[in-house]
Image (cartoon, rainbow over all chains, first blue to last red; front, side, top):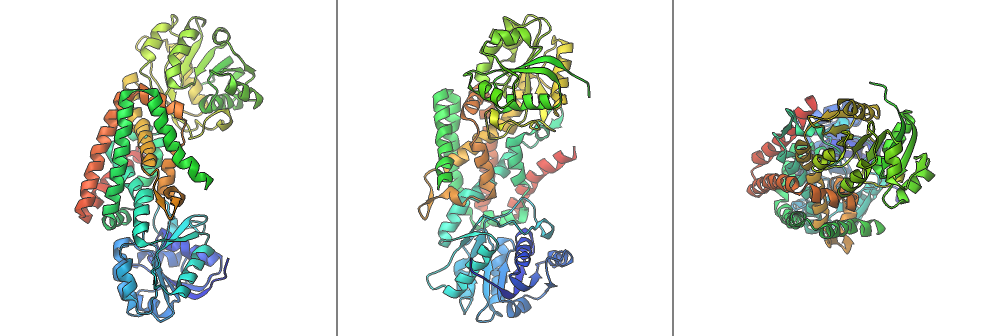
Length: 288
Length: 288
């Protein structure tokens, strides 16, 4: 692994991702100082108190002028505005990257920066918790980080961005923004939409006067974990990637209709075939 | 907690549930001996080798004649046949209970036993793993066990069945078989059907030549865990509880259609309202 170090790293949005990144950087001594900014000033204040940040900054321009690497990890709809402000102040060598779960905005973002400072990114990591208190340094260990460079992206800046994510434990892969948004719709955004809908669909259902969910076993519990995810983060994702999500949901609805029809038919061999076919999706996968 | 002890406990079907029950009973010294029978003889042999059973029995009649408590934990479509065979041999005081995830068969089962030996049960516990090697003594800790007694059920036998499940760590509740099957469709069978369909819906999808699932983050991973569940167990459940499952799936499809429409509309406040409404299902629940 390549050695990577920045005198100052700036983190915009010190939630689960931002705080965990700061902790991972700190643990591995990848920065001299870690500065942070948050939209309301609350999470950067909290992160400062927790010792996650070295300095709380309330002016984006200062972060832009002083930090060699800036990671924007705020809800996805707020990222373009933040990038526009950073673009007005960054130095030639500054690297700006982000953790947004949808990458449709990166075309405009790329054009904003005169020195090709911006590298779109997405560390695929998270829990159902949010805020700086939820951060932990091993969040990224072994997970995948997607970068979305362009043909004319600055190679040196791309390299360093890759290095820092690898240094905190991630496997970095590159793909186009469109590919990213389509893949993420399938493996993350659609599953979340389904989990929200599933929990929503049992609201008001009771058993012996108690909510049905008081009896929930393992299967349901996994869905409820997801359904506790941050509301602002997820509404931003649903809005930003709506076309891909709806298309993935339509594929899912077709698979579900097929299973429903097979269950209604009651032919055991048809059901086991469907379930085996499903297992195969995973079995072949883990061989890779 | 009431003290409960059986000289011999018989376990029919020594998979995840049967083996875990045996280990929990052993750890808590709730039986003199634990005997086991399995449909193919393989899992009882393996459980004997693992020290989970004291004796492997290949004749159901012997279990029926010798054991004071018999727990049937085989795939649900096989349970009625096993109960019929046990019913022909059990003694007056023998308690027969089961772990079937669907309880529609218990009316017939109840009538089979001349001494009201049968108490329908369902410990709501499990993992995606199966077989005796997957068993562990704390599987039932803190989870819910549903019993489905009738008006003329033997009170003493019901009491002892409740005691043994409580002794291995479960919270026991009673409800009617219909109520059980409807609740389980909502909190377990429907979520599993959805997880299978979701994984099924991304089959064949690739990114840069790799299966899409190689990139899967937390959200998808929860679903794939479920989708690895035992195929025979789940096809039996889908067949036995098809009407309730289809009805729950229809409620879910309606919730999903609503979310899809809201996502397509792109009104942030509508999406956050939907997500907040969903969180509320869980928040109020955990207060109970």
